[in-house]
Each structure stands twice: as C-alpha cells, then as structure tokens.
Amino acid sequence: MLSTVSQAVLMTLLDRGRPVVTGYELFQLVWDVYTFPEKYPIKIRKRISAPGYDQFSRVISELSGERHIRADPDFDGSQSVSTKTQVFRVTEVPDLPAEDIACLVDPFCYVAFISALQRYGLTVRQPKSLSMASPASSSWGKLKDEKLLSDYGFIPSSRNLHYYRRLEHIEFPNRIRDRKTETHRIKHNYITQKAEDSYFRIITLGDLFVQTLVYPELCGGILHVLDIWEEHFDTYADQIVEAVDRFHMPIVKVRAGYIITERLYVKNDTVENWRQFAQRGGSRKLDPNAEYGSTWSENWMIATNV
Image 1 (cartoon, rainbow, N blue to C red):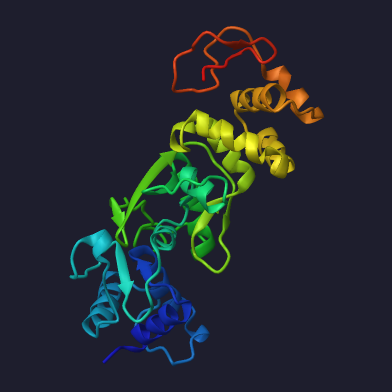
Image 2 (spheres, helix red, strand yellow; image 1 turned 180 degrees about the horizontal axis):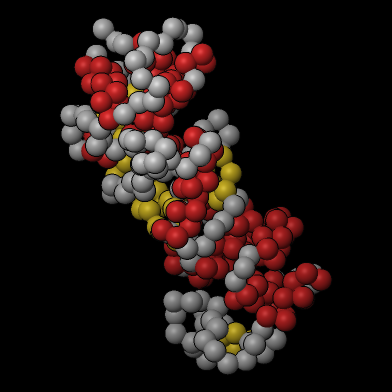
C-alpha cells in the first residue's frame, strides 16, 4: 500500500511520461509534494513539513516494492534500489532511445560532433557510436547552481534542507540502450535546442559548424569538415557567420575566414572584419591536431595544413 506521498510521486512520474528519473529528480519531487501539497489531486498526509532521508527512503522502498521503479541497469548495474541509486527506471513508461535517455539523465548534455552532423543531414556517414557532449566541470557547476535555483527557488544546502539528494554529474556507461555511446566533457559552451517530439537536445546548426573547427577530429577529420563546409555553407551562411562571429575564440574566426574567402571564394563584410584576428607568429593551424605542413595563408596568417 502506497502512502499518499508515494501516490503523488507516482502520479507525477506517470504524467511526465519519462522512462527514467534520477535520484536528484526523485528527491526534488518528494520535496515538492511536502512543500506544495495543494498542487496534488489527493490529500497529502505528512507529519513533518520537509522530507529527510527517512521519508525519501520510504518513497523509494514503497515504489520499488510494488515494482513501479527499479534501478536502471545501464547506469546502476543491478535491480536493487536505495537512496544511492543514480538512475531509476519507471517501469510503466515505455523506454526511449539512447540519446533521449542520456539527456534525461544529464540535464546539460546534448548530441554533438559527427552524430549531430548526421542528424542534420550534413554527412552521409553513419557513426557507429552516439557522440554526446557535456560541459566540463567549471561550466557544469555554474549550470548546476542555475538549475538548483530554478527547481527549488533557492540553493539547497544543509542549512536550509537538513537532507537533500545532490545534483551530480552522472558518468555515462559505454553503452546506453544497447548503443555504443561516447561522451566528451568540453570546456566551450555552445547553444543547444530540444529536438521536436523528443527529450534529447542537440547543438544548433550554426554552433555545430563552429564545433567542426574546434574539434575536427570528432567530426570526421579536417578533410571531411572541409567537404561539409564546401557543400553546405551557401545554404546556411547566415546561421554559420552569426555563430562564428559570436564565438569567443579568435582562432575560430581565422579558420572560418580562411575557408570562406580562400576555399569558397565568398565575400562577406562580417567575415572580412575577422581579418583583425589574424596575427603573425604563434602556432595557428587550420587543423589543430596535425603538423604545420608547408602551405600558408598570408591573408589569414594560418598554416593550411591539410
């Protein structure tokens, strides 16, 4: 028999229609039931004003005891559940593909690199692995605080909640939903968008072109990147130029400027303005992972090492 708190939690999980819920999300939902009981269609019976470890543990025990939730085997490796379980599988909700699950588990990750190129139809290659990106620790911490403030209305701590399940970065396994998955922690921030009728997020098209110049090795290699730019730049020129112009790394403007003006022979006032970022000396290369080679662009002062 479920308590009224567990009933309210279960109703919300089923209404959301998400096949997984993290330990952080589950506790935040229990806290919401205790704090705003009037939101729920049943009369909530509770003896204390805010949930603690015991109350959270009881909800997990009741929901798992009646098989409404279980530990997700891709992330926790077993069917046993506890307050330490990272990801719970909501058994009555149909499962989803790997990219949706990944983005439900990590609120800040997104489809990127070669997988995003394939999603946008910019490459005919079929990547064997799902490529995901997640912010590096410094950026993830800032995003975490923003999410905590949005979810709770304050930053939870031992001073204002004597117990709470922390929002932590959950490491992805090598396979999610039987699909090989590669996750890259990257320091650069890109704009993402939610895919229509899905839960997964994907880097925006303009920022994806930026990403090809920062991480060409994750986008099929520099020669494949140049082919993509040559084939698709005219179609998406406005989005690409805006994204490159906004991006904070001068070398990206130099690489893009060289490609647009000296390989595609396109004239654009914004691109011409990027010439101010060209500079002699240093170690500027078109392909950041290759040797310098013997060719050079005088206009952009960059080794065209392809």
